[in-house]
Image (cartoon, rainbow, N blue to C red; front, side, top):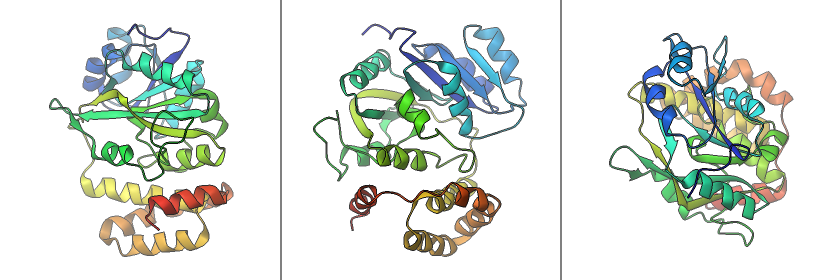
Length: 283
């Protein structure tokens, strides 16, 4: 399939200190690229501008986490935006296919592609779960319904993404997807897993330790719960974090400075979304 028109879709990449990965992956994107740099100190901005002059680079003075993608979407100015990490790219021809699918399904706000990990192209285990979503496939959507997604494999409808605020400054990263997904569903937009299109992800060796990452995920879960989940569910999550060993307790401590902001942004989910969450939880 021919690449999508430049007026249709932009690839938004948020990165920090991944210069070498970016210099390899940026040329693989089949649409205009906006790179938002989260205050890198490894010369990323200058290197990308020299090697890839067509890429729009937005250098930030501080690391704002996933909020950088929201800034990239604002700069893009296209009806659709595909997210990619500095170590991922959409398979040849599949970005155009994904845009066509979005156009054919006007209620679809977010499409999550099949994510193939590493040179051996292993299916991301989260995608295997998405393919068998207990929410089923709604008649007006192209695949199983979701209440979550993986950002590096997502294509969004810009108007819907911006209407729910995009990735916010409270949750940051990782685990930033949950609040966006819940708000899209609450606004009656559809989210779907589409196995017919693929994203390649070759995880960078420059990654946080598993323990540190788990603590960051716990932090995001806590803050998202405070913003959107019913109080009893939030209470159970807090207890789970306390019982979750060092990562859970560290995540709670990391969340504390942002609790006031999370509470100011609190908008409990409507009953239909809570019911879908119960289905996903097996309850």
